[in-house]
Length: 110
Image 1 (cartoon, rainbow, N blue to C red):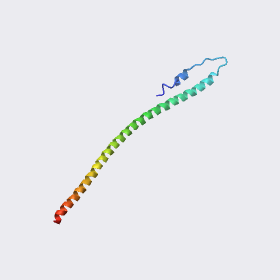
Image 2: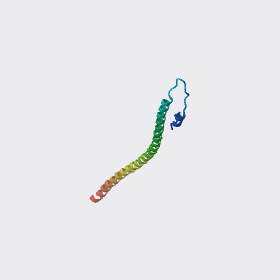
Image 3: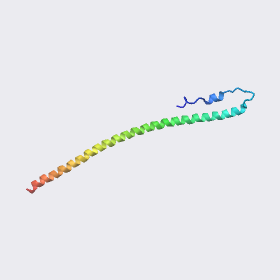
């Protein structure tokens, strides 16, 4: 992921040689500093790999959760549609019952 944006690897830093000039830096100080840089690079790469792995797992989990949400929304819509039919059926049954009472009540009163 980040490999195309990182210019140096720990190995490249380790293998880098500088030309020594009469007024140059002390090689031991440069080596000590580069050792510290190598250590940091190595740790950064380890952290990046761990985060890429975690990102992959979280992306997969996110996808799974989105799929579950879609399924639950579909299930809810289906139940709401069925619920509306149930309410309509109940209303129809009440109306029929009232009509039966009215019709049979009239016939019973005669």
